[in-house]
Amino acid sequence: MKLPHSLQYALRSLIPSWRFFNEIEGAYILMVRPVGGAETDWVRVDPRAETGVSGLIHNPSGILVHAFHNFLKLAARDRDCPELQEMLGDLAEQQGRIHFPGSDAFETRIVEEIR
Amino acid sequence: MSGLFPRSPQDALFTVQLMFLCAVVLESLEEFVIGKPGGTPLFPDEKAVREFFGVPFPLDLRSLALVRIVSVIAIFVFPGNPVFWVTLLAGSFLRSLRFIGSLNGGSDSMGMVILLPLAADSVFGNHPALKLGALYWIGIQGILSYFLSGIHKARNPLWWRGEGLGEFLKTSRVGVRGFMGGALIPTWMLKWISMGVLFFELAFPLALIGPDSAVVFLGMGALFHLGVFMQFGLNRFFWIWISSYPAIYFLAWRLNGGSGQT
Image 1 (tube, rainbow over the protein chains, first blue to last red):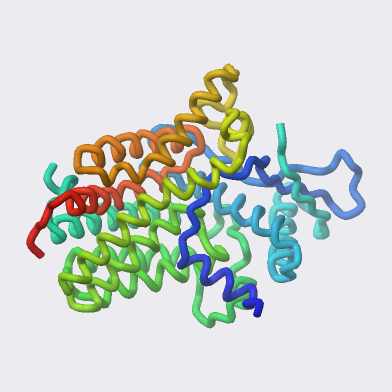
Image 2: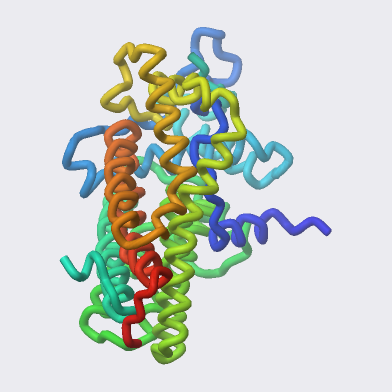
């Protein structure tokens, strides 16, 4: 029996999974361009964190970045979850409007950054 | 210092509670800032999340942060009142739902691991057996968090060769370029750092050999999390993980003949 996606994600917040950095993978990056744009129009739209010693106590930009990347990872891995893909579309649109004011439809790519 | 190295369940639980509640306040203040109106839009969209889980209540991050901060203050003002522990638990769970499982991965997991038994202890009337159970749960999960993480890494040959760590240190992973981000680190050094992380995590259960051994491993653990913060900006891991340390120390002391009165 397969649990509904919503229940799976709710349970995951209660059950610990102690896996950190065990999979060697690149970072997930969200790229957006206006619909019908040129190949060179792809823009990386994920937020960037500020770093510094005071960040040990208070690092709001860091948490924003991590939340963003956690979500991208979920969306990249769980492509058969239509709700997540819809949320990804909303997120891309939200970020796309910031980078391309005046455009209202966007194409999205999640790229795995490998160096 | 006796609070950091507790030898009674009451002291141990009190120290865990104190450190954990401080960590919750730090986290919530960050969330209050990123949730400000007109700031960077949050994701996923709140309405979409409500539909996804079918929950009727608001999942506004600022409100949830406020609920958690007020709960912590109320716990300090009205110690022993379980209502505020339940409120904190509910606020934390809703915050997890808000981010489809977690806001910050492992630190949220550890937060729940600590919060659930503390809330249970408060709700069920501070029963001595429950206090011990809570400490054992937090201590064992704390040890497993390192050990299982080490096991998973050890299954990947890239970690043994140091290549995996090299990739993590070189990339702008999770958007943060840390203190080693641009540096050219020699392969031999990467291999040694990588092996060091593996052995540290795999050997962590040895903290239970005795209180002295626990102090050594917990000290290394604190330095490890400090390094992770400096490289990846993961400040929350530092505070929430060291909140579990008094429970690990107590466990090591208790398993080696310690018998504090409950």
